[in-house]
Image: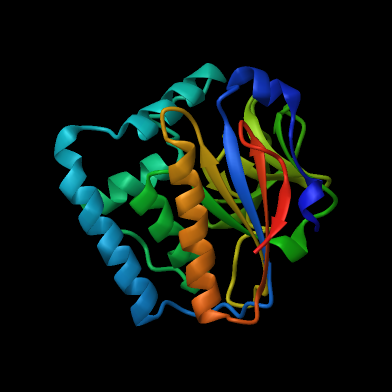
Length: 236
């Protein structure tokens, strides 16, 4: 996997011209169970979400609700990742999964934008944000058993040559590329719509990269931007 293999299809750009993302490709990490450090990050994010909850849904959460409706999804039933995490943070608490997942979930809630992490070693070919044909396979779990389902035609999905890796933009991740405690090469996707400032997207990426560097000082981190931001590649 290389950064030039991460692409946004023109059909998605037409749907939301304001979409932009920062992509971080990280190698040389060693995932582990939740630590006191990652637990603290999640607790801080929970507290921030609860403090802000009295003002109603965050404008960026509402922007993702609108984006979902634009391609036929019902955000009340299948919310964006940041919407779902904010609800969990406010009502009961965020899950503790493993260090890398805790890291990106904490940044997602604290900065109020969708953040996803994938095992980059498991991608097949390029990773593309597309509007689905409806024939792409999606590897998931149904009633406790492995199951292959198909996205709705026109649904916005992340997909590679082997199928869908995340349905409904950032709603549900597939099994094949999820991060486990054996993951050593990671692709992080930080996604933004208006009215979230581009500076906030950049700050979220910098926070994530800084925490990675502190834990794994020898890790290699590459970065690129997609969409409304400059698409220049840069090392970190």
